[in-house]
Image (cartoon, rainbow, N blue to C red; front, side, top):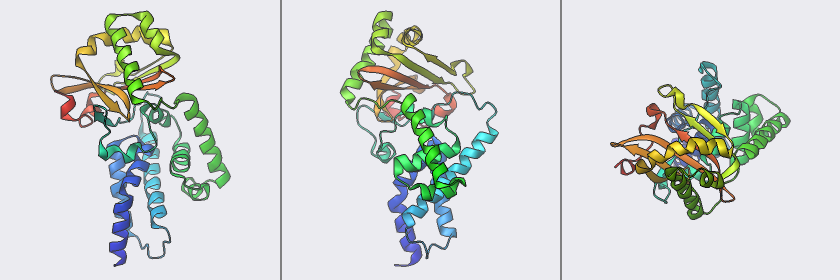
Length: 294
């Protein structure tokens, strides 16, 4: 087998892993695909005959491409403090789309992806590569022009923020769905006390309406505050379709064949600890399968 054929074969074997790295790094499905494509192009422009571990080399390349995208995004963002909900992974019903399985291998819930958006590019790279893909700090350090000790410190700082702000969801999908259904039943009935009962006292509701729906760019904290907001969700019940959002129980709200919002729920210890809503019409297109829009 020629060097080109061998490297091409290795790339195809690693493609799903590279997409997973890029999605966690960027939170954008389209940018993740672009990063993987750029990695492919760099592979074919490079002499890898002396590379001992091509898989590690590919991971390093895609991480470097993603880091450049993050830095560029950060420098051009006009309002860097705007709340941003990354692209959700949406599957109909209670079965994860096979195309999304590799992207969700580490139960990357939507709340976790939202927290990753708050990290610096260097923190995000160190945390994603080390904690999610077991890349040694000796290999991470050159990417961010830091020492291995400094890279370790960046990952540790990111890890603390993730653990504080993105609790691990309950693994039981059936129980998750029961809690989400109870939330919508209470909001539909306007039952404030029932809503408070299903919400964690420190629950957070984050909504991203994008440029087109700026009034929906909000964050609310606390069970009573979120319950007050949730009463308005009752009118959405006829348009709510159960779905898996990043592998967890969630909802797609659709009317007249178009998606209005995607709602991801994080359920921990039987209560909702986070609700993340993407309501940006520009980004909703293409994220929801037609079967959820009927």
